[in-house]
Length: 108
Length: 125
Image 1 (tube, rainbow over the protein chains, first blue to last red):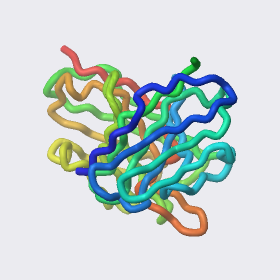
Image 2: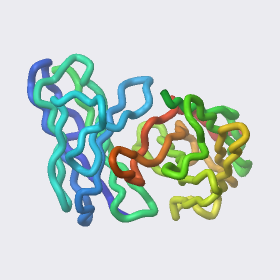
Image 3: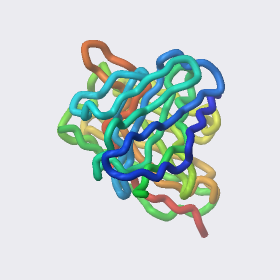
Image 4: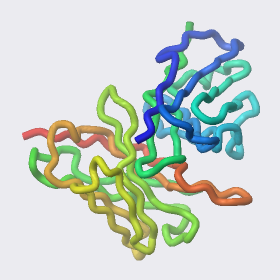
């Protein structure tokens, strides 16, 4: 089973700042990695698939990069609605599909 | 707009079977391009994929839960269901259903969107 680790666990930033979130896989997942956003009381929402492709309707300030074992989600300039928990997930080696533990982006 | 809604008991006794249903609205469950999945999140812990099922009945499960999981589809009601047997306190979690698969110019399995809101199931006597 591929284990995903995310860092940092919590990222404290202010609106307008740049957020850089990391996801590392225990073995190569190629480009088969997604990022999700979850706000309190809401269902997760798919943001990025196959490492760098934005889902239709996701703002351009969200971007994904990486391949193999190291991946990054970047939010170029945080908007108030971006403060949430972000999860990575791999579909390279399944079953099972696995998720990372999440990074919480909160207000500084 | 596709929407999913979980339903079922919020409290299950240890050793019994947890049963949940996901109702899909705004689209048909009988699409060849998608599977339909269940994911859970224990309190304070991460997300765990439980399994996915196609409208044809083809399914695959998380190996760690496979011996206890059964999923089914009812296309006439646009629903799919989860049964998890022999539950313990470790099965206490928010259970969410989601569509598995993303289709743009191609279709990509293994990604989940959209999700239902989730329902908390507590295992306790």
